[in-house]
Image (cartoon, rainbow, N blue to C red; front, side, top):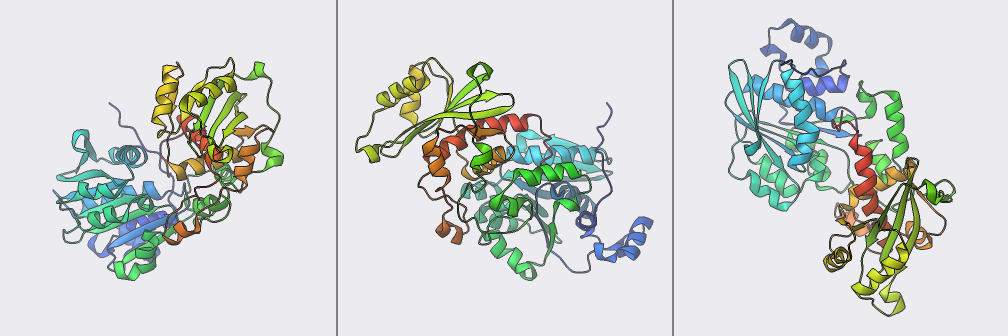
Length: 441
């Protein structure tokens, strides 16, 4: 079978630096290295670096360049050794790193055997073979996955999404002589543990830092850059577009523009699909948001909002289900609901509603909701008074930020949570269905 080829474009200077930082040109007789060392000596390692950190904006070409350079370094310097590669989860690692990496390697005469049962890549070139183990570093318990293994190097993709305990355990496994560490991430807050421990202590860790912007990726068209710049706002714009480690402070949905985002609903005859998103509370408010799809846009058509605390009377699951029946009338759409509302979910299913559990990833959900708002994927009708109140008062937690965490204040968030559940489960799924899987190219 014909080998799939990866279409490279000429590299930027920063990408070339990543590809060559570990090379000592005195060890190579190849003419290409001699010429490169003479014309671009800054590309080559003149210090005894033990780690490289690449951070900055999205779509800057960090992942592609780092993963390729990591394997080239390993295969050049080692034989029959073990290496680690980590993402937030195994699934995201395989989508964003491993799949495109395999295409690049196989197009460059490497042989890659993916041993999925072991989460390990066996990579061969010529007579050399090395083994690359895959890890997910999503929470504190992930550190148990890497205990006991001896490694010659470790590559962390999206390290800012991993707990410090996992990274410390993994870096401690790199004990083969000459081993190096590779870190890749988009910025987070200025008090994030990785910035404080690694970026602010480069000399301590003998680490090379290369900061990327979208302009450092020659493969990215100007129209694509413009689309991403229009998609983000607020703290996410500063982090993902400008590449800054900045505080998440103030109003979360500071991008909400009532003049452009609030419109009259389309005629019912033009609505082709409905969903309801629900945030369930006992004393806290219970919210239903009805969404309708028309001509490429999802409209938030109406809301139900009841607070047991405000009314001094808590409703039962049965009463909320009755209210949902009245809220929907003759409609019978799929219900997206907070996964913690187990008893209410069970009741709705007994009443023959199709219920799916929401993804409760707060930060990713907020970011995707902002993108959906900025790109016109969702619009709002004028009668959503409680949602509009919350959009004006849903704020970041300043005390959590001082601990290096991005967290909303748990107030005025119930309608916003219901909105986030819908966007992250339905709008995001549609947006990404036809998108390239090569996340950071």
